[in-house]
Length: 164
Image (cartoon, rainbow, N blue to C red; front, side, top):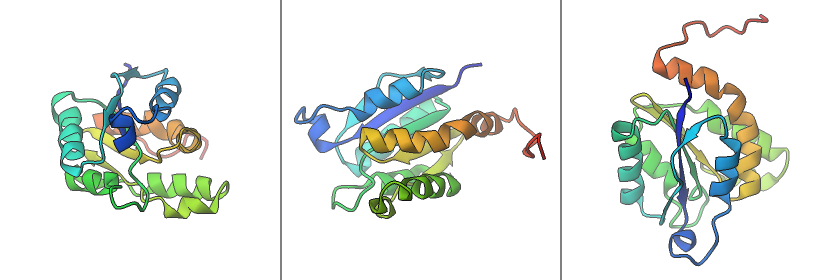
């Protein structure tokens, strides 16, 4: 069964048409194996982000939401706070692994505040805003996605690697 995914871009400039969004198309291309909803572009508005994440998880029942943007130190970067406000459980290993990979490329990776968590049966993952960083982080995330989503659906019961 194909997994349903949503891509949510957080960018004031992208939302107002002042900057072309390149992260959304990059994510859409990387998610070719998923049934992906049309990309949603929102301003950096915490309440709106929270409402959208809740709708995607509770009403649209997507398996995974990938956000891009709003994870830095700027005053309007509120994506992690919005995510943490709506998830039931944290998945700290995902942003830890993304930062570890990104730190091998740039020391600025330590400045990202990405978060990941589960709301109901939906995994929500915050990615950085640049298309290059999105691709680098997805290299880390995609290999575990099938197992993560199977487990969330209650379809996977064995977590030990088969080569162990």
